[in-house]
Structure formats: C-alpha cells, structure tokens
Length: 189
Ligand code: UDP
Image (cartoon, rainbow, N blue to C red; front, side, top):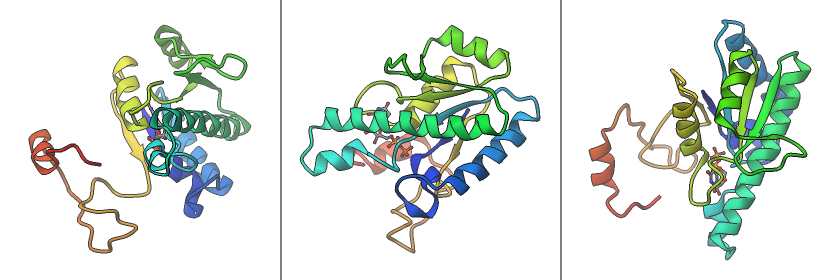
C-alpha cells in the first residue's frame, strides 16, 4: 500500500497539481509494479482542502472534511489518468459513493482487482469526517492484507515541529505509542 499525500502531487507549488511531479511518481509506481507486486494507492487531499484548516476559518468542520474527501477523489482521478496513459491498468474505488465516475469501495472487489494485477486507487479516505487519509491508508491496508505500507510525503518522518517553518525541527527515528500519548496528552494536532 502506497500512501501519497496531496502535497506530494503539488510538487513545489504546495497547492494544485504539478504534472511533472505526478509523472515522476507514476514512473516510480510503474517500477514497483514491474516487480510483480500488487499495489494499492491511497491519495491525500492536502493540495486543495484540509478540513481542520478550513474549519479554523469558520467553516463547519464536517462540511470541510467532506470537501477534503472530495479533493482526494479529484486527485485520484488525476493520478489514474497519468498511470493509464503510461499503460497501467487501474481502478478508482471511493469510500463515498459516486458511481458515475468511480466504483464504490467493496473489499472483495478490491481484492479481485488486485489479484488481476490492477492498481487500485482508494479515494475519499475513510468516508468519515474527523479522519485523515493516513488513517485510511492503514485501514485499507489491513483490509486488503497489504504486507507493506509506504508513505510518500514531503517530510522524512514525524518531526518535533513543522519542517517548513522551523529549520531546527528534529526528526524522530522512532517512537512508542506510549511516548506519543505522554508527549501529547490533550490530543492536540
Ligand atoms: N478527510 C476526512 N476523512 C478521511 C480522510 C480525509 O475527513 O477519512 C479529509 C480531511 O479534511 C483531510 C482532507 O480530507 O484534511 C485531506 O486529507 P489529508 O489531510 O489526509 O491529506 P494529505 O495530508 O495526505 O494530503
């Protein structure tokens, strides 16, 4: 399972799409596929809408999260198009039904697509507000019995601060669940 953040699709722009970056990611996906591995993708939406940020501007959090999930579907269609132009067979499956443009997520059907060698792009996250596409990646990975989850993002891992804003942000090489809970007892972001 490969999780690609929305920002990864935006390249250096931060917002929207950078098709040369998506093209490069697609080439890497093709290399992985050529090893014979089954491959599922979960695509984020941070290049357009993050619910938590929009809700700080006054939008209802649930509506903002649904907007974020719709953003992941737009991204999934963009990635699908680029992958298919390179000859890879794909299916987009959404956690929120929109059958005119993508299949609804049905686990057994996802497994069948993967067995046939199709790349399955899981869109719309978990389908629920107050979650993230990282959660969706872990959740879908368990359901499809993925052996590996890889996250493609703009930072090297979990850091002590936002690396874009703090040049001294420290990268944590590892952390136990307990250490995270103790460090962040109120569950702040
Ligand atoms: N989102 C959500 N539920 C989910 C997945 C995503 O509500 O299961 C919304 C949430 O608002 C989130 C946005 O979609 O901020 C985009 O997803 P995410 O922030 O995970 O994207 P990424 O950071 O990977 O680009």
